[in-house]
Length: 524
Image (cartoon, rainbow, N blue to C red; front, side, top):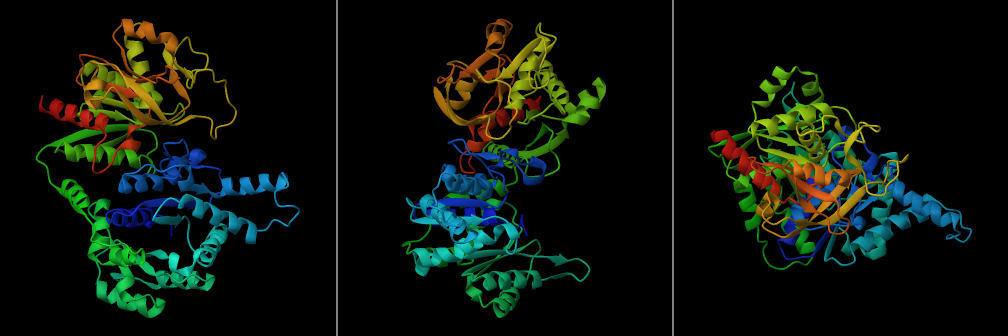
């Protein structure tokens, strides 16, 4: 089933191979007929991750980048809709020279072409197939994976199958039958897994599980990895090493020498250490029905907490409910927090609740960090408090009088939502002497974007005259990237998504500065 841990397993294998000084690339195939992940519901699929070159992808790309500490590109994410679109366009232009276009060989060949092209510059290329064995929409991809062994040589392909072991509370036992059936289905398609990964949410007798799964699947016991729920996902690379699976895969890759896992030992030590001080952060959000909707952001805040040596108590606050509260109720709710974090999002729902939280932070010197939409609501809150009572965004009030947030420069109103935003990495020049410059300790940085609306340059001078500072500007187009309010504990907003550049071994500066300010605020 989906959600069993394929992404973390894939990323962890990559981390173990990179620790042996191999050049590793990773690629994800998703079976949806969407062209990219940009229009998928966050509540159902989790966050949309954006690569440096501006492709909206599945959240697993975030795991890959965090574990590899590397930047991936558009080759690393392939969605079936985009693949089919390419094939149809090729057929329409006569590219198949009158052939009947079929799943086999045309689609399966196209899938293999994507696999080979993405891994061309690497020692090892890791491919994750989304979905589950037996799904109608995934059959062509599994078949392509089978054929790949014959195209590049069986000695150059290794198959890892991740299966889930359900736990029956009533009988107190872990059941292996669904996993047995999954392996049997995979074998019936023609793929015999070299490595079997058993995902379990409960402790188990590892030897007993291995013996049973070996009996029914013919996978060698020494090639069966058992992954129980870990205290941190960053322990998984160490588990791969401890159980010997990383060595098996490394030997297959002809890797020499032992893995240097010091980085991961340090990350796990920081992630699992109990710190004396606890910081309570309120995340005012609107996508609350899936824990993965803000996964990169959550990992970024956690990492910043470890490196600031504080325990993180991250509380999700429903922006809509905050909007419906009375003023006194809202104040009592927001008073609980040492810092307020507002992430990105789209649409009017819950925005006034976010503006209310930003206003509270502004008036009460509470550390505030706004990302994308969070920067925009901070701008609106500041403007309303400083002579622009009708301040708003064109997204929420298209005919508003004081639109401090508007469309991208030169962009007309759009009737399509897919692929129409400002996406990918842009440079940001930092204003010397500003908080942003102090936090980054650099003159220029590069961060990733995913948004359709911008700070309205018509209000730049007006808002700067009443105290707002535009501390980061994109040199390519002059657009505001970072805003802040001086003489405040930490009131900063960025138009980009800094969570995408955070790594478990290296916290992102804006998050680290925010946690540091929140720690100081909690003393008061």
